[in-house]
Image 1 (cartoon, rainbow, N blue to C red):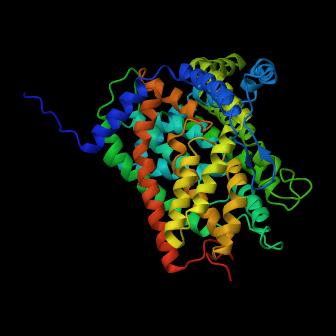
Image 2: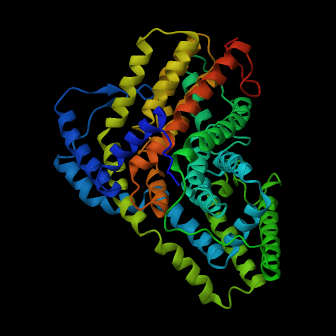
Length: 508
């Protein structure tokens, strides 16, 4: 039979070039080590020139910090360990995977995946995974450490390319960061910064944490739909058939013991949920903030990783008892240990990534780049729709060099909110535009805290994968999300719709 060669499209050729260039780079850990060294050199160069800027929020003069100075050398040497151990994603990943390791070791995850695959149409899986990724943003890190790797396993079990499932989940979790049906921890954080910036013009102004809610709800379905389309029409055709070493888990129907295990796990989860609700529903519940009785700033939200560990671990043990896959505590500990065995390359990568991020923050180079970029936009004199689109693009570009949404907004809000208020735009509307730009480039930004983890997940299925693989796979999502969100924002402007409860687009 004659082999038929499918002609590559222009987009596929472009993405292949991006992937080749990216993967021609050294190992990701080596690359981050090189980045760290480059930041050290750049800090010395920047310190030789007058690159001082004024922080728009505090009025403080920001100057480059030279890491080749005596003080800089001391910081590099004395903080190397704490840079690593204090790197935010590291503890989150380790603790979460300890609980997930129990659930996986006892067979709970495998049984649930088989149940999902057997009961869901293949085409529906993609939409469900992207949608679940968007919703997971409410609990912050959950999507990265739980949904992204599980989506790859689900796709593999369904006979589809695991990297397509991983990409779909990552697109929802990170690219759809500013879309949701529920409020998350970032909403009050950004609202607080917006309030402070708005009071430069109006001392009595207050931005509600739910100020962007209407726009976020519509965006949830937009991103889920666009993410599904990109996965099915661009990513899956480009990846082709999976020929890696990982084998799909059996998708035989559940036997009686496994069904009993699922029942036990369900009961355990319901009991845990009842415990959580009992601490959240009453106004003075034991999981709320003891001083303000709030939920968003409560021990529950700050301890969400602990709940992941407990839910996965308890459910896994309950399943193991019901399905008789565990006989004693040693079986439980083996499951936890096995989950740690898979993280060797990730821990090496994180060590160098943590040093790079710390050096970049110490030098103030990110702050200087962000403030200068904001000043350029301010002097361009644009108005109306072109102004907001340009603002979105600037936020998207800054996201490539500064990963923290709140850090960027702390710099940009004092400049743009007062400026846009004087042009007639509300702080809530400016915040929406910022959040769009901040979200769409998360999935291609090496500065994003969980980027290293995504590289490690991909390498499980493609040993030769690297940063280029991640960027080339996720780049179509970035472009489509950006275009789709801009179109939605323009429609919103033309229709004059409120963007949240009591939040209009224009100043009264």
